[in-house]
Length: 328
Length: 212
Image (cartoon, rainbow over all chains, first blue to last red; front, side, top):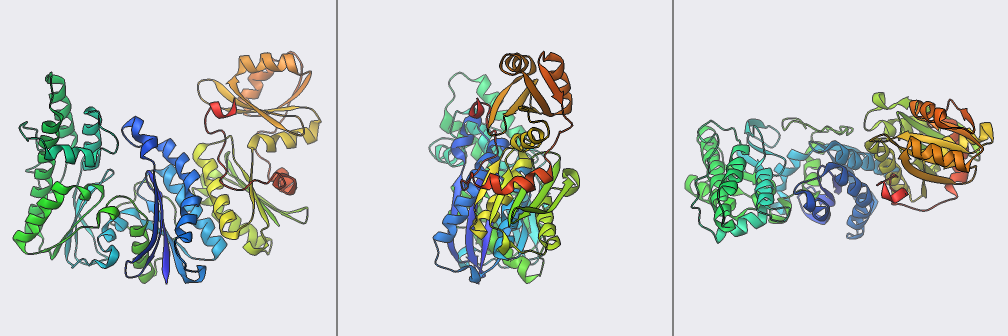
């Protein structure tokens, strides 16, 4: 049996068909990078417009890419939050209508649970208890998971997310949106010779990135011939030190068998390298989603839907913009 | 059976037309309905009229003008239902629905006003057959109406039509039609569906330029 997952929480329209084991039969993602690149970030109204244009073609293509019949689909799982409300309601209302037409249950899924489960797509396995670091354009937090269903939030960002900091620094440097991969690439050929601050580095497990972003802006304003590669290298260095220090601190406090890193920034080669070192040192498993499942996608929503089915949580979805991590 | 859906203004509306007869219609306040209220309303409508989704032969959905998120609620639901049931869906403007109602009552050309930003309005002109849109301020639109029309009925945004009436020198009637009527939607659903073009239909107006 299969689940149809639907994801429209931010700027990607996505649908996927996934089985209980995490095999992805088909996955279609229509991104809106071209629409938002002029703004250096996601423009919510344009995101909603694109979602409503793309959602039916996306689902249609997802179904066409497989040979399964409608009777093999057990349920439809759709992101109900957190995310942009105008984007969420398009996915949710479409899913509710499909469920009504096909006579399938429609389950509202927490986007963050989807990210967590993304590390288990394609038959990868998280060993619990696990430490989870979610680093994306919308979120940055550390959470402790004693089991698949229990989550304890340890610390989150007080202001910008890591992904946001990347995008904003990218915009200051005149790079394309999304800037993450470009900043990481440029950083590799630069030297980290500028001392940017590491906000909150000594404070427990909370994060803050707006000060770092402002420091980059101040540096750019103060210098006549900035070297983009060196700025990227110094910025990435600061970000990575913060993330790694916090992960280490969290792992010291909570004994874990795996470290799970998910979200768009999990695609960063620098972060992957740093995380591998931590895990090798401590002898624990590093769970990183395959790169294509790091950013927003519907396969992870589909896989998370199975948890809800197992727990018989047939929640009729209502979009909730600020859905907390600890809720289903 | 033909299903009518409207979510563009402050009421969520569902109507069912069976064999040319209006058999069910209901409106509910948008604030009470919430983001997924249209799903509940359609479910309720099918139960109340003892029908199932298999009875749906076509869908007519209001594509605005109206609240942007609010319009998309109904349009995404209608598109999803159309796709899953493989039945046609057709978009109709909220201005046309108000125009049909006012024209039936007064037999005169109708202008429906929808307040937009910076003192501008979406103005839908309905002559009993077709709809024309203009996006402009009240001064410009009143000059246009004074030149082009001898008689007109005003519908839509209540404050807007009162202000516009003061600027008009021709015969004018201020109607009490300020919202989409569920009966008008239900009664006219079969006729509206014959203008059939399948998805994707978009909430109009998407941009100011798309309607000028």
